[in-house]
Image (cartoon, rainbow, N blue to C red; front, side, top):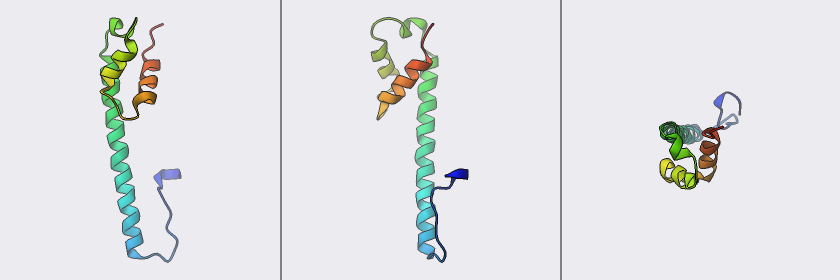
Length: 87
């Protein structure tokens, strides 16, 4: 949705419907911020890797170690791996 909208309320609406929508939006925002912070932490760890860490056998295992076992991390590890490809 545009401009960060997370839902719609149709008029007339009850006060508890508005409070529920606000609670869901705040919960979603907190979850999104936590995910962004975790991504930033992983990116900082990747930037700290030496070329030796990145090259050769075992680099996928090293990425898993660096990512700290991120939940659902296969996609995250793949994106980090693509970012750090040495040409």
